[in-house]
Length: 96
Image 1 (cartoon, helix red, strand yellow):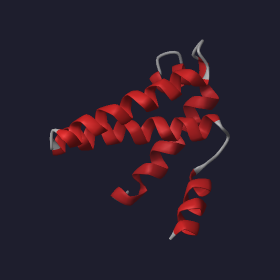
Image 2 (cartoon, rainbow, N blue to C red; image 1 turned 60 degrees about the vertical axis):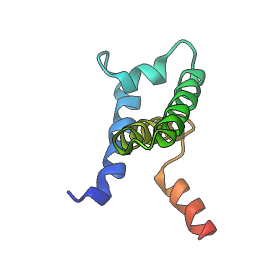
Image 3 (cartoon, rainbow, N blue to C red; image 1 turned 90 degrees about the horizontal axis):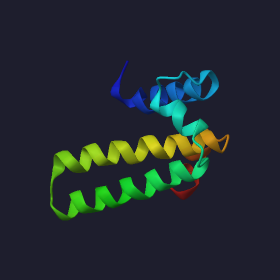
């Protein structure tokens, strides 16, 4: 698998966890959290702040790590809203 496919692979895992809801899965816990989608929205806000702080500190390792967390939680939100990567790609393509 190429690195360019990693987001597609991650999204497929998220979709699988959404369907199967395994008990030991953090991803599944976001879909079944008592706060509902607010749990994911809170994580998006938290991760966005952490990306900003890492950028402010010019910490490339933390920027990468926190950006990965941000992208992951964004993908969970897309899945939660019954959207997929094609929706995102289409929007980006229109803006190009």
